[in-house]
Length: 186
Image (cartoon, rainbow, N blue to C red):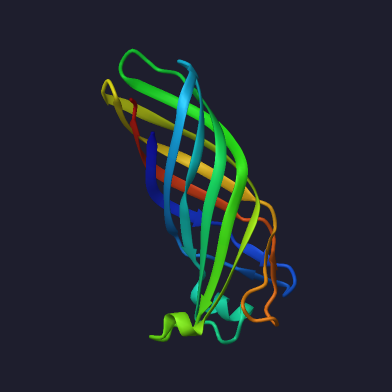
């Protein structure tokens, strides 16, 4: 069982149907994974979590003139393969990759106090893939702590929103995260 927490940087995204490019603020990523070792050096795991990034202030208005804020929430659903190289000193470098899908919700709001009455949102599901690497240290026989990097990529997104006049088609998203990682073995 593994938990990761850290920051997320999302690259700029092109909105193809509007001919515009939007940027995102630094956000947060939290992941949970469950898996098992096939052999000491290889593991397979299922990973999920949430990644949140808010859109740069004025960029939300590109999508909808009534929007002051835009948030992108991504929930990865991935199967990962992990290669580990445990060292006698307790350090374990690792590298891996995964594939699956991402549930992505784009939420636009006007920032008023009646948040739920003034928001537009939609959710899509698209193919996703990731690569990751890091270093863990065994603090006990069943507990490791460490630091890692994850790259998550998706295919194009299409959001229709609650408003029939709102259609958003973006290029793929690419997220970079630096994470603290905690592994508990049982």
